[in-house]
Amino acid sequence: MSDGVHLLIPFASSPTEGCREAIRRLRLPRLEQLLGRWTEGAPDAGEAQSLSPPHERALALARGWPVADGLVPLAAWDAHQAGLPHGAGGWARVSPCHWRVGTDHVAMADPGELQLDETGSRAVLAIAAPYFEQDGLTLHYHGPLLWLAQGALFEDLPTASLDRVIGREIDPWMPRSEAARPLRRLQQEMQMLLYTAPWNDERQARGHLPVNSMWVSGTGRLPAATIASNEPQVNTALRGAALRDDWAGWSAAWEQLDAEFADAALARITLCGERGARTWSAAGTRSLAQRLGALWRRPALTDILESL
Image 1: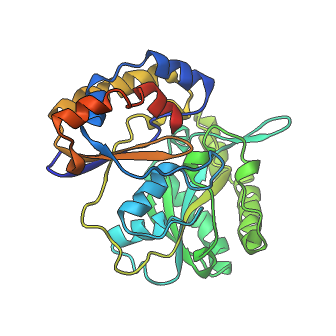
Image 2 (image 1 turned 45 degrees about the vertical axis):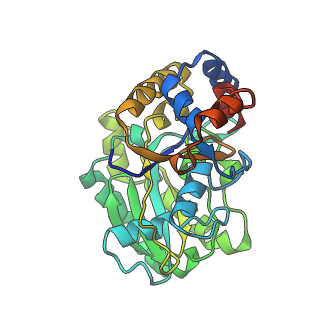
């Protein structure tokens, strides 16, 4: 890591009982040492039901964007990074995905399980693009599991992050507003179209999950002149295990990450859970006397992680 790094760690905690049990056994000595020396800033307290998870809100704050739930313009940022004309209208991330249909609910599979390559992704995009165009929306290929959609519909339409939905029931996260009606109709059209697509039959014959839906997230317009010079470094080492509820794997990933702190030139660290985020900065490093006095008041690392 380079000097002055702001390290942002998503999925540093979860309110699930499995995670809470794992936290009680977790040993992160280097992280404890850092937090003991550094000064904490104002926390970001939220709810696990917010559309935008804490790590997306933390990114917005670091980049100088206004934070509105469900309107962290990650797609517009992707477009900016890709050299697309991001200032024209709103943008959205569109993720091809597989919905697991149960007897009484529908859940989102991790898109990574699709094993979708560029050829397959572009084939699905070609199927979808004309239907998006009918609603004034333009699709751009950005990666096998991520397309970008541009259009006025996405300028101020709140949507739930994909990270909120993976492995969970979809219904609580679906956009319900009147403004989202075109999106819901488009999603239904895509589901019917993909259900009958011969391309999906070929995928299933090869043992792959069918692409049977899409998820829209990261909506909004990129604010002008608010791109931060000190872009946070997002470490996603904990994400996969957390989304799978694999708390043994999550603990192992945390301990590996903790070992890397010894070689890291950090200036700031932000820990993000499902509800909130907390940030510590080296700029406010305390004197020895202050640190010794703070030992009596400092919450244990277990309490810090469980608060997120």
